[in-house]
Amino acid sequence: MKTLLTLVLWCLLFVLCWPVALLLLILFPLIWLLLLPFRIVGFTLEALFKLVGAIFKLPFRLIGVKI
Image (tube, rainbow, N blue to C red; front, side, top):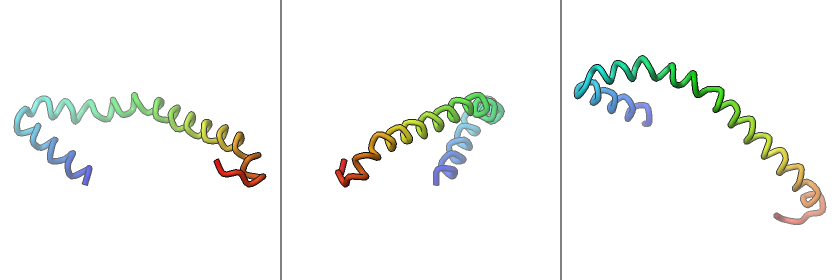
């Protein structure tokens, strides 16, 4: 559904202002590639925080305390 909505919005933009739509079509992959390292760092930090949380909660889970 999200892909269909994106396609419809892009077609609407293409009808209203085709140079901007074509520029967007060209620049979108480049912007995605530039932002990819930040996404990788975000996934890594999220996993690290979950690991640290699990390590701190482990003693309580072993004795049966619900957090």
